[in-house]
Length: 292
Ligand code: URA
Image (cartoon, rainbow, N blue to C red; front, side, top):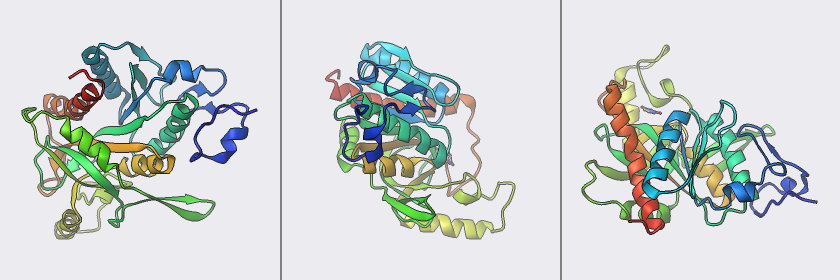
C-alpha cells in the first residue's frame, strides 16, 4: 500500500506511508481528496503574509475569471486557490519557508499536479536600484556569496544548489508589457538568515561594525551581481531544484540599501509596491493561460 507518491525525486520513505499528515498546512494524503482539490494547479505562488496572499489570490480569480477557494486551515499559513493558481504564505525566513515548501511539494505530488511551477512573489531590499523596482532573480546567494542553500542534517552540512530557472525567468520577462510603469531588472539575490546584522544593517539592537564596514560588504555584494536582499529565495530555489520543479523569485524593492537601512515608505506606497510582483506574475499567468 502506498499513498500515491509519484515523484522519483522525493523522499523514498514516503512511498511506504499509509498516510502522510501535512500538519502545518492542515491536509492528509488519504483523508483529503488532494487530486480533486489541487490536481489542476499549475502555478504555486508564495509570499510572506497570509493577508497579502489572500489579496493576490482574489486578484488572480477576478482577472482570470476563475473560482476562488480559501483552503486555509489554522493560523500558520494561508492557502488560497484561484483556478490553477495556488497562493500560499510562507512567513519570514528560511525555516518557515522550508516547512511549508516541504509540505506543499508533497501536496502537489500527492495531487498529481503536472508541469507545476513555483514562484515566490515578495519584498526585498534593493542594491543600487530605486524603491519600487521589481527584481527577477537569477540565483540565490548565501552570505558568503555562494549559490548554495546549506542545511544541517544528521550533524552534517547538506548543500543544495540555488540556481533558479532561466527558462521561467525569461518566460516571465517576455510576458510583460513595456508600459507597466515600473522598472524590472534581473540579478542575483542575497538570501540571509537575519534582517539586521545578516543584511549588514547598522540599525539593529546589536552592531559591532562601522558604516564603512557595511558599505564595503554591500559593494562586494553588488560586485557579485546582487541586486536585492531577502530571506527566502535560497529555500525556494534549493528545494525546488531537489524536487525538479522550475522556480522563480520575483520581488519588489522597498529601499536602496546603498542609501539607507530603514524602510520609511508610507502605507500607500507599500501597498502600491507590493502589488508589482503580482502584476508581473498575473501578466505571465494570463499569457500562459491564453487570456492576454
Ligand atoms: N525584506 C528584506 O529581507 N530586507 C529588506 O531590506 C526589505 C525587505
